[in-house]
Length: 209
Image (tube, rainbow, N blue to C red; front, side, top):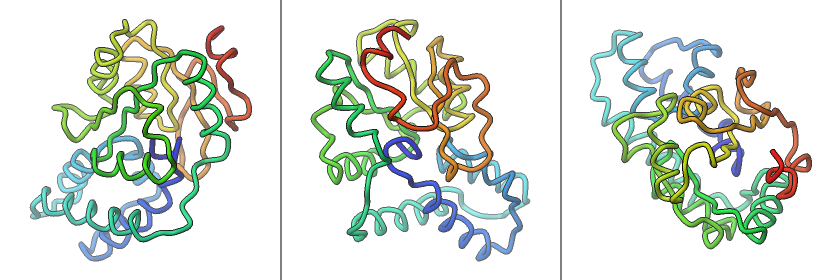
């Protein structure tokens, strides 16, 4: 969802940088980019260990979640990434089973889908916050395949992050990498196909993929 349906990474980067400043730590752009696609819990756990922070991880996660929810609920000019709505509609009407697998909270997932009028297109949603392991672990996509009642080899994942692609490939799925410049420095080389625009995809192309 983040970086594929909604261009949210610049928002996360800004909020997280504000929190880094409050914590008086310096997180490089390269390190910051390495957390794209993983859960807030996983990110803050690694940061706390790396920067020797004596903090409650759950409090940092709670604060970040509250900041983002406030933004989503109050921002009037949110728009989906160009072309993604048309692709979702095309896949849905062509008989594909769509599952949204995101590291975000389920509350965030539902707000984004509702704002973009996409809720009815997805047969299931999976939140990484409700699982034992976060991307790049494959658990989120293995769970998605189960909900879709499909074998992993029948599934295709669309991801904008290195963590997401690593997760999808570890789950035994094909993966399409979407180049989103706002998602930072992401190595998408392990994807089976890399696109720069959703205009490059349609149901027919994915069926033949």
